[in-house]
Image (cartoon, rainbow, N blue to C red):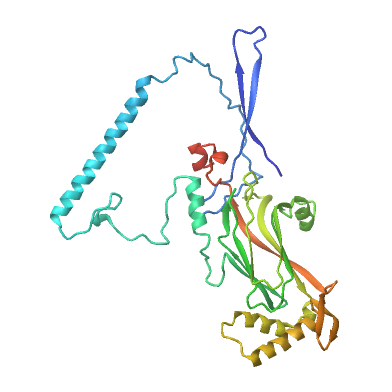
Length: 373
């Protein structure tokens, strides 16, 4: 599903024989609106906005010289603002002196501090009014790490395989703007299943209502899936892996309609040994020994070597014995591993708001604030 918006501007200059009309097409983007709580507003495709008449306007451009701003207009405006700022500063100093005279032991008066009779503590659950879509999105991102349920977390996900702990995925926050970088960490501490490698992709896909879908959900996901960033890393003996994909500034943010919706996800693929062949006890002992800060005794080191020998000598061994004699043992990496892979999808939310750079907004205040539609 793709919708394009553009603005047509036609000009006709006098003095030419044909008086040809020149047209310029200016593309622009329309993002979905959000509520005060940051929830994306949906649109009903069965009830579209229909305009029965052309709302294009035509006007005559007057003399360019008459539209020039007088030289003194800007100076008068700046002088008026300076006088107003000076008056406000004088009032602040006057109030500061009066307060010091009335209460010599009192605290200093801040220019942004409200009077004591109007001062009260703001509640964390108080409804904060917003003046633009940008403010609504900013507040939604600030509240994104706060979960509504005490048992659920919006930025921490524990990954398990057949009831065994594999890793923990942590996000800095689950909501982002276009052009922002997603900071995430995968931790392997206290894992019961070792991980050989991971592959992370930042992707978006469309979800079609089954009532109007002509294909299955898996087929629609395969056709509409778009990978925006990818990352792969070897996780052997790693305690954590960090990655930071960037949301493209020209990508389509999340939107919701009655028929088609767009979702963003971080898809993480784990490569692990087969669960039936994993010596979890030896791996746990090796992992716990790395986290133990107490100095190991010779007896403990011998036990750890035996446990590691069981781990490396099992079906998930990464090394195989090439030669052994009284001088020692030669080990080499195995050519094949009996492993399997599985993937998980971590949902994230991408808002249709730029990061505020001049290249994306063009320095226009209207584009930074946004208009509610």
